[in-house]
Length: 360
Image (tube, rainbow, N blue to C red; front, side, top):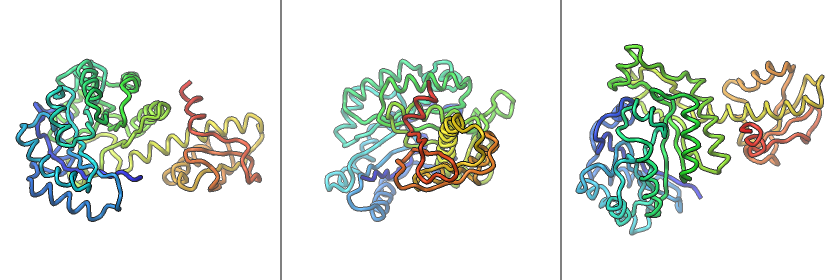
């Protein structure tokens, strides 16, 4: 069944201070907190467009919900309550900081119909947390997760790559620690340099260098594969391309792409196809023409933007031709390969096969 979020952005509300990378007003295109009337209007408008029977959550993003004044929390949640009672929505989702989680806050949220809490963890490497001005250490995250689990909420964890002091080793450490926490879902965001942030000043002074787009894709791909191996859903990679972020000079630097998550998935399919082609060529060393097989829903991911994946594979393996067959019998996230003339591939790689080899 399809799942939909109705996003309500509350930029910076509840945040005790500004993290060095954050300017929610630029990221979300919302400059002030929304009123009760605006929340109701957003929900009513969204419900008119959603398919009947869909699992729908009202989602408060952009601030630290549990850190805002309790009366203001009640004000927002009271707008949502009638929709819950009528069965028009299934629950409430919110994002907050790990250092604003305790028993009383969680009991309060449960009473108001909150089902999912997404923690803005960003990293579980203490050096990275300190350099990024988060104001807490990894121990705080572990305690918050334990409390959230005790109160039976769905748990989401939001991570960032490319923060000050970060590197691939720290990102993979954070990934493995996150897996131990067993979240229900994960989001991964590359760090962007947004005007009006302390990070922008560091960048201008030469004290911070953002990841390139290629670097960010590779890191996120590795993290994604670790999570997929453990069957942890990665529900988003990359920021949503809000107009406020992409126009003017809001975005100063960093690995932004409006379809960042798609680029990561294309990188996964490229590596998976390469893994399979190596097996094929191991038994057919003089082969210069071959055929790849893929489910039609995965076609664009295998081919890549502007056929970049096919060009890369041809060059890397010194091939003259790669043909693509859309095979309805191929499982999603699988790739098949064989000689050009073959219509049913003898060499196939499921995602789990590929992950086992790639991460070994």
